[in-house]
Amino acid sequence: MMKGKIYMIPSTLGDGPIENVIPQGITSLVLDIKFYIVENVRTARRFLKKLSPEIEIDPLTFFILDKHTKAAEISQFISPAINGENIGVISEAGCPGVADPGADIISIAHLKGIQVIPLVGPSSIVLALMASGMNGQNFAFTGYLPIKPQERIKSIKHLENRSSAENQTQIFIETPYRNNHLVEDILSSCSDTTLFCIACDITSETEYISTRTIQAWKKAKPPDLHKRPCIFLLHH
Amino acid sequence: MMKGKIYMIPSTLGDGPIENVIPQGITSLVLDIKFYIVENVRTARRFLKKLSPEIEIDPLTFFILDKHTKAAEISQFISPAINGENIGVISEAGCPGVADPGADIISIAHLKGIQVIPLVGPSSIVLALMASGMNGQNFAFTGYLPIKPQERIKSIKHLENRSSAENQTQIFIETPYRNNHLVEDILSSCSDTTLFCIACDITSETEYISTRTIQAWKKAKPPDLHKRPCIFLLHH
Image (cartoon, rainbow over all chains, first blue to last red; front, side, top):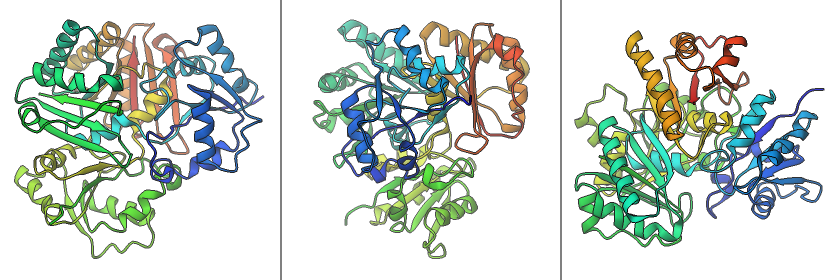
C-alpha cells in the first residue's frame, strides 16, 4: 500500500484577510485531508473553516500535539499515514515545526519513510527578519530568554556579543505579557550603537516594525507591547 | 506629504503553480506599485507578469540591487518612497532580505522613517526547517560554508559541535554545482549519530526532503544534487 503524506500547514498569525497570508492552492488541498495533528483543536477547526468554508469538520480526526503530549502517543499519530491516509499538521499560529513542538512528529515520520511536504504561509520570524534590515545572510532564532534577572541580562549580553563576533542577527521572543519588561532590559543592557528591531502584530492591521539603535530607542519611547505578539531582533 | 511604503515581495522558488506559494492578496497589491528594487530585472519582470498577467511592465521603474551595487546608489533607490510612492523589493528567488543583499536598503529605510511591510511567500530555509523534523525552537542559518578543504571541514565540525552544545539546528547552503561535494564532506566529517537533512527543489515537482543519521546516509546513497537548489540542515 502507498503511504500517505504529511503536510505541514501554516496558519494565520493575526486577524487580517486570509487571502493575504495563505496561498489559494492550500484551500483545495485540505479538502482531501481527514487526519490532523494540531496544537489546539479549537484554533485548528476555526482556521480550517476560515480557509475552506465548505469543509466538513465533524468527520475529521484531530490528534493533539502540545508540550504535554507523551512520546508514545506521538508515534501513534503517524499511523494513518502508514495506512495510506494523508495527515495535516497545524500549529497554534504560523508555521508548524518552527518555534513549536511540531518537530518531534516529523522526526518519526522520516524514520518511517513517510514523505513530509512543507506548505507556504506566514512565519513571524522570517517576516520580521525581512523587514528588519538586519543581516539575513546569517541569523539565529533562540526562542525565549531566561526569566531570572541575572541570567536574562547575561543572555542578552551573550546575544549581543555573538551578533558582533559572527555578524549574526539574533532573533528571540518573549511571553507577550512580559514584552515591555524585555524591552527595558534590552535598552539598559545593550551598547548604545547596537541595532534593535521590534516587530509586533505582524500581518495584522496594527503591524509595527521598527529598527533603531539602542540610543535612538532610548529617546523615542517604544510603543506599548503588552500582550501583543512580538519578535525581537538584535545586531551589534 | 505622506511617505510611500516599502513592500518586501517574495517570489517563487521553482516552477510549480504560483497559486500554491504566493497568497492571492499580493496579486492586486503589485498593481499599485510603480517602483521596484530587484536583484535581477529579467527574473523580476517575468515573476510580476506571472503573478499578475494584466500588469503593464513598460511604465515600471526597476533599480538593480545586487552584490555589485554601491552604497551611494542604494540610498537613491529609496527616494520614490520619500516622495510618496510605494516601492516593491523582489529578490532572485524566495524572500527578499533573507540570504540575499536586500537588507541594506531596508536599514536605510528605517533610518528615514519609511514603513517596511513584509509579505508572505516561500522561504526555502523555513520550508526546509518545517519538514526536517529538527529543532525549530532554536536554529541558525549561516549561509555558505568556506570553499578551502581545511577551513570547510573545520566549519562543519564547528556547526556539529554548536548544534550539540546549544541544541541548535544548523542550516546552510552551497553553490548548486558543489552540492554533491558538500554532502561527501559532511558524511566523511560528522559523527555517525548526527542527523543530516537534505532539502532539494523545494516547492517543485521534484521536491526531495529527507532526514537521516550520517550512518544511514552512508548506507542509502544520497540523490544526485548537482545544480539543484538545496538547503542542508544538521543536528547532533
